[in-house]
Length: 124
Image 1: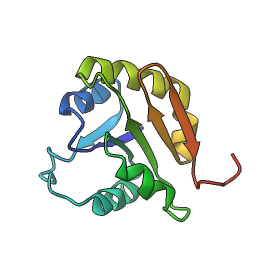
Image 2 (image 1 turned 45 degrees about the horizontal axis):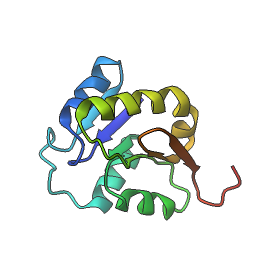
Image 3 (image 1 turned 120 degrees about the vertical axis):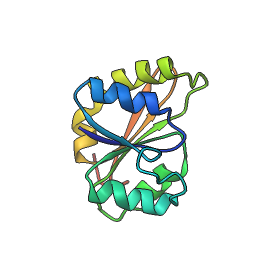
Image 4 (image 1 turned 180 degrees about the horizontal axis):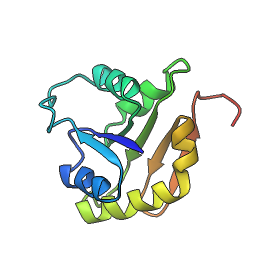
């Protein structure tokens, strides 16, 4: 899978994804740390990447994507340490790959994750 880490995601999470065989980029590595959310969203669509973020704005943008294929993994964790984020992300990737491929917002909490298929109200 292809991922794009938002600025609020530890860059070492992106490094871990690469170690797992995924193609992953981080905004900081590309010098895009000041890019507005809307442009990040457009970049993710054009590069066919799943956005990794703690920013609630991305789930709202995805919900209003008007059928554009995009996926967002939204972390809603109390423990935001890298090891916990990686542990939760590992579980999400095991369980949610198909949904992410089709377009979804996956909300990741401490002990569960929820999948919202896109477009919202699309019947899945």
